[in-house]
Length: 401
Image (cartoon, rainbow, N blue to C red; front, side, top):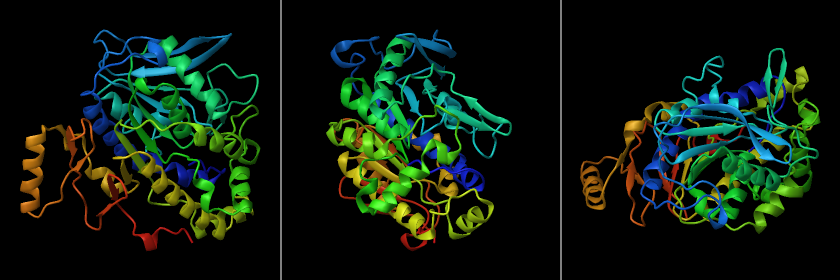
C-alpha cells in the first residue's frame, strides 16, 4: 500500500525496506523452486515475445539501459544475475528501479537489498516507470524513461510492462514482485498474459479492497495523501488513481490461479501517535492525518491483505516486517524435496515437537518446503485457504494509536 509523506514520516516508512528485504528474497527463492518445476510457455498471449527457457543463458550479461518500446518511447531497465525464471520487480507509487537496490540501513550500497539478494541466485530485473523519481538530499533524480503525454493508469503501466519485456528480450515465464501500486500492475499484466507468469510475490500491495472498511471521507483522505502535489513530488509524477482506475480495473480482471503466490504484509505501522504529533508540529504530516485516520487505514490494509489472500488459493500470507524474523530466515531454508521426503520430514519434526515447514504448492502436492527458524513470540494461524503465517506484533499491539 502506498502511504508516503515528506519528512520524518517518509523516513520511518522507508525503514521497512531493510526489514522486509530478506523476507522478500526468501519469498522469491521459494517461488523459484516451484516455478522451475513447471513447463515453459511462450511469453505473452498467443506465444508472442521470446520463448521462455526457465533459465537465463550463462552468456547473458548484466544490463542497465534504455529499451525502445515503440511510438518514440523508451523505458529504463536494469537486469543482473543468471538463472531462471527471471524475477521482475514492479515498483510502488513514484519509485524508480533503484528503490529495490538500497536499504535505509545502507543507502549508499545495494548490499542486503532485494535486487542484490535475488541476483545472487537468479536473474532479476527492475525498471523505471515514467513519472517516478528518487528523492535525494539535493532534490529528485527523475525517471530515466520517456515521459508519457498523459498520466498512466495501472492498466497503461501493465501494457508498458509487456512492451518492455518483449522488446528487451528477457525470457519468461517470470516471477513478479509488486510493491504497493506495483501489485495492481502485475495483477493486470498476469490477467492479460497468464502463461507468462511463473509466480507472484505481493509486497504490501495495494488492492481493490482497501476502501471496504474506510468511510467515504477516509477514502478521500487516503487519495489526497497519495496525491503527487500533496507529497511534494516533481511535476509530471505518476498518480495512483485508486478509485478511478485501480478499483474498477482490478474488479474486472480475472485472477491467475494455480501459480505459486506469496503475500507479504508489514506487521509494524510507522504512523504512530508520536510520529503523527511530531509531523503535525513540523508540518511534514498534513492535519487531516489524525490518529483515528491512521488507525482506520492500518486496519483496512490488514483486512484487505487477508481478502487478497483468499483470491489466491494456496497463497502463503506472511506478516514479515519483523526484523528478527527477517534476520533468521536465510536461503538455506529453501530446499527441493520430493513428496515422500517432505511427508517424512514433517512427520519427524512433528514427532520432535518442532514447527512444520510451510509448503507452497508447485505440483498440487508441494514440490518444495520453506522452513522458517522461528523466533520466540511468533505463531502460525490457519487462514481460510492455504497456510497463513503471522509473525511479529500481536493483534492487540498493531494499532498505531
